[in-house]
Image 1: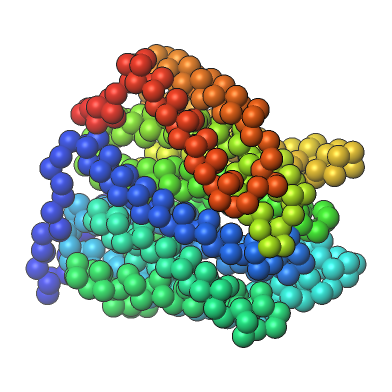
Image 2: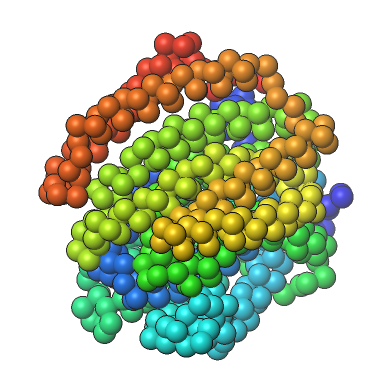
Length: 542
């Protein structure tokens, strides 16, 4: 679609685009996003350590995590999910055809439509908090089994739900910056969330009764801080929107058309995790918390690298598609698949082998017990079987969204969600009845669902002629297999002699875990180098 800038405003050249080779630019962008995200994830782990000390695996902890998950779910579904995947390709099209003036006009209309909608949704969430809580924690509401926990979650949700509007607008601002290859600021923004929540838990908790209420107010404050942080950078780039309510604007209507199916296509994993929360509300106290901590460790490599790669390739794929360059489009997807496989496989192996020691090092303090760490370790091990699939989904889905195809991922997503429901029944019921490990069954079902979704996305790109693997994959996977087997052997050998994790002081745990990480990472990297893999293989031009 040809887009013309307004007559009264001359077309201005967009910010300069790097002239580097495609993979150099992608690698640099991924490094920026990955480094910033790593800092955010480290602060997130520090936040969770503070949470563990404050709440343990108690009723209050379960209630807060539900109240925190609900706006986060909608944030990932809309702000980081459907909206971002629909908005970025349309913005790239407007930029390609109309320049900066057309981009500004689009941003103004989108800001008005998005802001007004978020205001109404937030109002609904606050007024109907009991209903929303009941949908997400049905087991606490049904039959009045957990009235105190349900009431506490509802009260906190009234405070945390407006975070959805604030963080969605933050995501909108970040999507604009990412589209102009300004990746660092959006990637650093989540650090502020963790800093504010740490302050709420350590400084403000004493002002509230119960103390966990401080965390709910911390979530709301963090939303304000994150949004305000990004605005000056939009001003500097000349991209700060001036909201205009115009639902008939072609760009807004196109984004809405793309968003409707993308809500399911891009956020299948998030819907799956919410289903886990609903089912976990029927399981023993602590199940929600055990799943939360195991999911947090799975999210570490996924967020640092998988989401970083996906963030960088979407605007690049969108520009390549708009510019009619299918060869570079295929090469970008292949590069992304190799990158995430390089990281996902060793991360999954290491998390599986080190599950309980790692959880103990990070979270067994204060009210957290060795039993909590053992139970969380079971679900973490189950999640590791889906880690590669989680990452593949992140880099395969942009192959559809960049081409403004949101219908196909919807179909695949619905199949995956249906499979998750079946797998949950197959795994949760027997594991809960015979081993009291129902939460592990939920994690196993999530991993299986991710594998099905990733395979469908991959097969769709292959059958559509959009992607074909480039030469060298067999040798690449053989090198990874050798390196991962060597790493697992080294970690297991060391763990054979170090078995007192629950009894050691924090500093004894910390240095031993550092040694394990160094030994495992050194082995993995050493075997890859010995087998002939070099960093330049990930910087090669197409």
